[in-house]
Length: 131
Image (cartoon, rainbow, N blue to C red):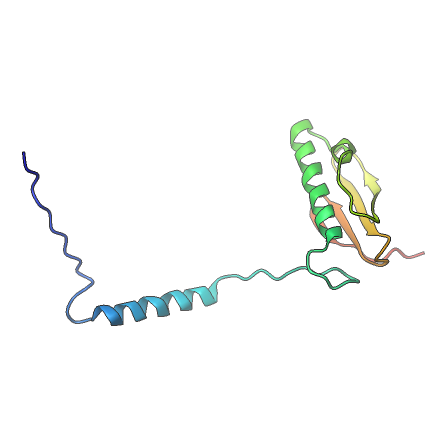
């Protein structure tokens, strides 16, 4: 048994537009669309100016652990932070806590003034503590 042979004719490629010109048009279209794509801007720390510091990453890991604990148990618990790996000099302080909210401040002894807050909203640079 022999299957019938199908031929496919693309109506968009014709003799009017050479294939080289079509490639140039496609590249120009892709470049124009790429220019309109949203771009991520890196978040810098308040004192260090470093992008995505260890302190910020630690605060983000804590945020995700707290949110996962909330999804699993229905309330926030600091038990999720028991085995959190802290870089040398980094510590966290529990500033507010309830079953439905929390605020953790992450600081680094080696970089005074650099601090991050982790809350149910997300991780943000912390304002300095006023005495």
